[in-house]
Length: 283
Image (cartoon, rainbow, N blue to C red; front, top):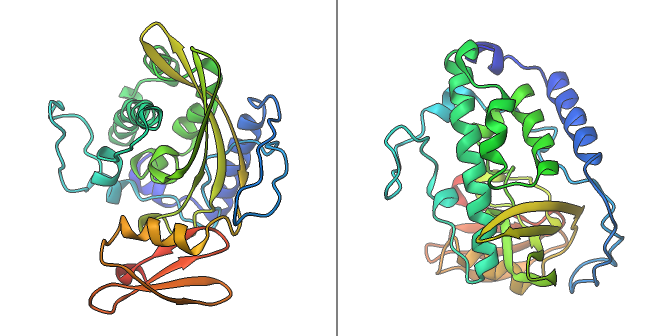
């Protein structure tokens, strides 16, 4: 598909692609673990909702031209021809070692797919098929995790060039992280996600993600998810916004928002229901 063709995708086509993605991923889900209720959240239902890449259907498919025009941001030791990614994706930092592992696995997966997606936009006939990418992707993902990535790569690869809603570690609210393990080779991460200013209207999720170890290497295993509405207290929102601006100050709230301001008096708004925030440039 040419860049012009990609930009011309209609709203109907995007909804169809989202439906296909949901059906594919639904087939990958097994088990219904029972999580305890979290403070500030309604009583949880079991994690039976099939995991999807939570792309809002009202969001337009990203423009490949815009995605390809990002400013260069080099990583230490990164080959010059590797796709450049914004700092929030590349430099996300965590206190917990397993959160860092999850981030690295997601990042490596995305680098493989985004390089191939750029080739698809440049010349589809010369781009690798998903089957050609599979062996490399299996270094970081269990087999069942590849079906949703294949759907994205083959049907709407533009999302791979603007990936803020495709990855979970960069949206993790780390204070909510809980760990459990069946044995030394399987660790389960449970946490809440939130939306940031560059991905407005993303719905917060309760996530459960398995990390599987083989020797010294880890891979992403099963993923389960459910919507998290009204999942963040005022203190949570303040903690999240401090990562965007250390001088943030709480000034009040209403039925739908927690309201903050920076040292210049500019507003920051945390949206209670769906757990995302907007700041001055986006308001």
